[in-house]
Image (cartoon, rainbow, N blue to C red; front, side):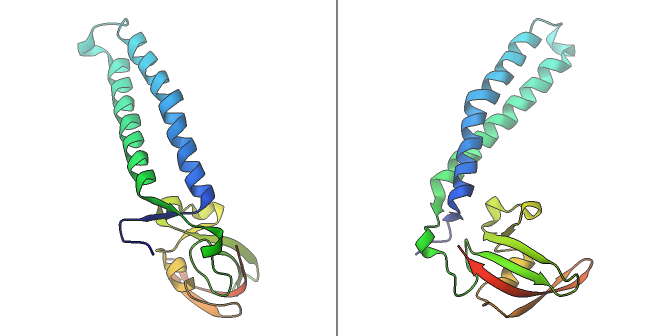
Length: 159
C-alpha cells in the first residue's frame, strides 16, 4: 500500500505540519525580511552582527520551508479505516500499564516525522514502537532503555 518513499502521517500530524509551513511562509518570512531591512541601516555590513544573524535565520526559515514542502509532497495521511484496533499499528492509540510503576500511559503510534514522546506520540521506529507493533490487548512487552528494562501490558487499542 505504501512505498518506502512515503511518509505516513496521522491527520493531526499532517495538519500540524501544514500549519507550521503556513506560519513560516506568512509570518516568519516577513519578520526576517523586516529584520534584514532594519539591520541594513544600523552600521557597516562588515561589522553588522544583527544583519548576519538575520541572514542566518532567513536561511534556516527557507530551509525549513523547503523541507516541509518536500515532506508534505511525500506524505500519505493514514485513513481512520486503516488504523487497526485488534493489534497495534500506525495511528493506534494504546493504553499501556507500566508494570514497574503501576501507572497507565496513553500513547499514539506515529511515524518518526511527527514523533513527540513528551506528548505521547511514539515513533513506530523507536524501541517502544517496534516492541508494540503487531501486539494485542493483554500482551506484555519489555523495552531496554538506558535507564534499564521497562515492562508494559497493553490495556487497550483504539483509533
